[in-house]
Amino acid sequence: MDAEKMLFEKLSRSKVDVLVLEAIQNQPLFDKLISLSFSDNKRLAWRAAWVLSHLHEKQPQLLEPHFAQIMEFVPQSQIDGARRSFIYILSNTSFNEYPVSFINLCFDWMLSPKQPVAIQVYCMRILVRVCKVYPDFKSELVVCLESVNTVDYSKGFASARRNVLKSLGKG
Image 1 (cartoon, rainbow, N blue to C red):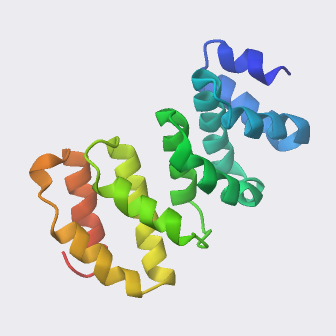
Image 2: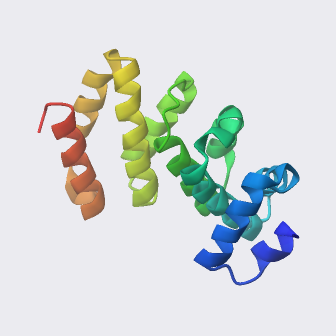
């Protein structure tokens, strides 16, 4: 299966499912998807990362060895779709060894109205996980979220903010 060719074609959910199943069973295809997701080609990177996000739902352990590489790539990527997929993956894992620079990035992106709401919310989820591992961050996260004027943000952000504050005992 030529992953690049398939990613350039019209990509439906059923094609993604086929790619996911193939990548789980075929290490070279999995490696190719990883490589393509870090590509400078916007379309390839976004679509490969999207496939990896679906693969992660089925076999999360396959991506764990790549988390450090993903965390290095995310801040420098100019491809919103790839960043969103990677942040989604990191927010839906039991992994909890985030470098301080990545934690700071999550705070920045969570509070940046310029970021897409999905990235803001996924960063919130990651920060909640960080609070469970490093309880000292809880008060900082609560203060940040309580001081946000939700007028500047989407309804999705405001709802996620409310839910996170509740989960942290402040809602």
